Length: 189
Length: 199
Image 1: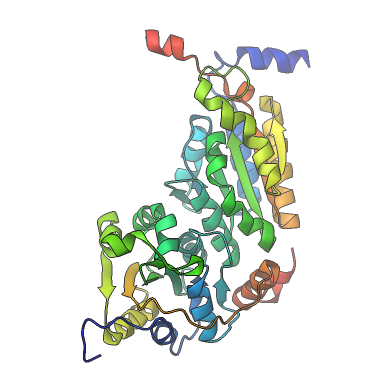
Image 2: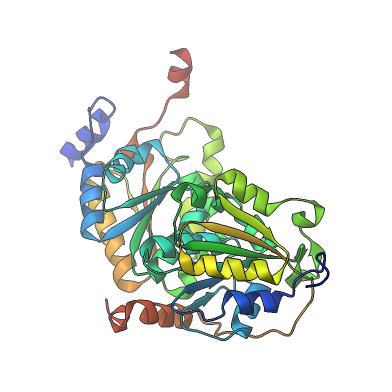
């Protein structure tokens, strides 16, 4: 426990967290072939890994609900996918989540949180605080990772849930894992 | 056919698009396009949407990427396409050679009382698709042009966007199965074989 706490405290100075590499490996082992995303800084390392992977199709969306529909189409065609998005994008997906819910299709969503631990920007709060409730209202099974060591096991668990029970599942990757931005510091620079 | 300004009839258009359909895969947008595709004949290789407005084109993209050897035809309405308008940009970037998007444009929200959509006021969906980068993008006003689009679907030589200008007629509903699990399972079983039934 002390070890984990120390890691979390020091992560601002730590050069590169290893969890995105673990997540990449887990998603490859799960057979993910289509990656749909609206970028977020917290996903940048994972996005780079998929971009360099010739076996995976990385698709940039104009809005996150496109990804819900695209991965439903992928499933109809026999491919597995993952949707990478920020918590604000969850709000864009709500009605489209009818699709995996009513069709019993797998949907794996990895959501990097804003409006969460240590948030500086007040405009991120409403959707950030509403993210989990919104997903659960639409029948998505939600788990959270709030330490770097939790991310890989939570993604492994959600991938298994989604692809083995044919349901939508989301992992919320907390801001404590990602590190909170400090805009006052950024503005001074 | 003699009057070049006469609007096409939606079921004539859909019947021609699906003539001798072979093994093409079809996604139908919610509302009248779903009923039109179903009126042409319920089929395991159809995925008719009953909701998720705005999904049709992107479902076509995911399916086309997953099944690059099959031809995918999305048949949807102008209101549904407008709700997913960003999809045109996403699809233009991905350039799937095996995807055709046919929009049945009656310039109306047909299911809700025939209110005008943006296309009734001049918004040009074919122009938007072209500007997004879908190079084969056209407005279709004759059955001869519909036949050409039908042939392009089967050739699969590049992403196609076709805006079909149709009569705003309200026709008898022809309903496919409504249960999403039935539609999903029969489609996957047809495309992927019996192994789709197992984890």
